[in-house]
Amino acid sequence: MKIAQALPLLLLISSVTVLANAQSPKPQHIIVVIQENRSPDNLFQDQNLINNGADIWDVTKPFACKYSPYSVPVYAGPLKACFDPNHAHHPSWVNTYDGGKMDGACGIYINKPENCTPPSATPAVTYVENEVVTPGTYGLLDPYFQIAETYGFANYMFQTNQGPSFPAHQFLFSGTSAPVYPGAYYDWFAAENPGQSYAQVGCTAPSDETVLEIDPNGDPEELGYTPPYNGIGAGYPCYSHHSMADVLDNANPPITWTYYAPPSDASTGPGLWTAPDALSAICPFSPNGACDSDVWNGHVVVSGTERSILTDIQDCNLPAVSWVIPDGLWSDHAGSDAGDGGPSWVAAIVNAVGVSPTACDSGYWSNTVILIIWDDWGGFYDHVVPPDCQTGTCTGYGGANGGGAQYVYGFRVPLLVVSAYANQHYVSGACGITGYPNCPNEQQPYIHDFGSILAYIEYVFGTGEINPSYHYADYYAPDGPNNPQCGQSCTPLADFFGSTYYPFTQIQHAKYPPSCFTQDPNSSSCFGPGYPSDPDDDEIDLQN
Image (cartoon, rainbow, N blue to C red; front, side):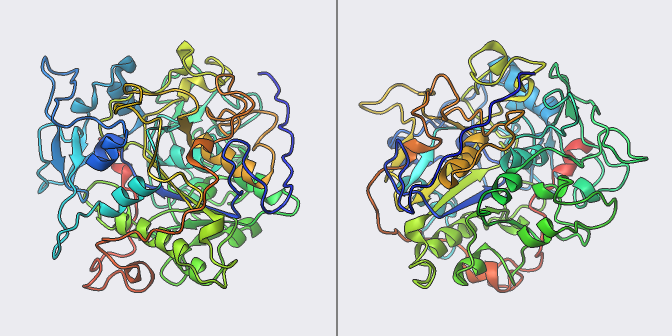
């Protein structure tokens, strides 16, 4: 393994220093909103966005199916879908990818209760219908569509991993899911969700908990990592890899950050979507216990209606960096516990920033960037082939057995970029319309991944990388200066930003008002009984 050179520290010249490419003021606050389990083809069938260059599959055309001599039609389905396509790394990701043919979504296993009737025989090859909200004439997805049409939409944002929520959240907080033990930083990657319990995971999981891993050759179904705890077997999900917590806490002065975890319907912990609970430096090893450390207690908010990202914005308590996870009722995760509050919840966050009290740094709109990302593809179809690191179309990562190439990249996921300095009506990598290339326009600097988000945070706040000794995804960001195809002039996510300030545009037509997320979600005017609810029921994926 080649030992890395540390990135030089980037100095903040003043509070109004500018991005090298974007020529926009550096923000003082970055909010990373992490939604659940959708692909661009599935969620963003927005004709206005497509007309503006979004690379979205034409649902009037059938989709390729490896299990049939014929392509299959693409049907509409609800956001609140009772069925949940399996989205484990193996076999679902592997079969769906099919060596780059992208034709296996039609045959993956579908998790569903007995009373669930999917819209077609191939429910993973469906798109979310923008169903009319009653009463009214507006669509349920209108808030998502308005955000995407008004601000920035990424055509080519890829998961940096090939699996479901547990490893995806590790990448979104740490830039890796490698457990990290001497000599094996990139030999093994956590690739699945916990196999026993989804409610109590990470360093407080039962002592027999395991997470399957990818071995150095990319082969799945392994338990390669044995943590340094007596009596704990291989695969236990309590890791020692570095994270953004190290970057932010070790800055001089320290940079404030908060991880807003959902309260969960379990009494034991916030669950598999809460990345810090699998890091021993934040959540000390305590099987069947609880996370308890100064870092955890100072930075992780198991947020309910008493305190959340929305209340902290209103109270002028917004940290410099936030990771925000939904409750199940406003998660976009499909399945038996699915809700439909996601578009309204995201709109509430954007609107809270846009109309924040002037007492809060004279209002947060002018100095805040909101990055809205979906953590994985959710098993749903997508037509764009991800970069292939093992065959050389992905630069930066080394080959297998040393660079992590056995586990990058995964499928596309949506990314929305909201800021007063975000280029208006912007599609990153626009294609298929007059004056633009044909689709896909998958080229630099329009290729983004989870590492782009982390590298953007590092750039804005002038820090170094997560682990200078063993590079993580932040260093390898495809739109960053360390990618030879992009070059030293590149800045992560820079193509989304310009020098022009735009007043805030209110996001309208939300089905649920903001009070449903800050007061009583169980009221009849909101969601009814069921709060709190786990945002992810992926544990059933490993049981089928």
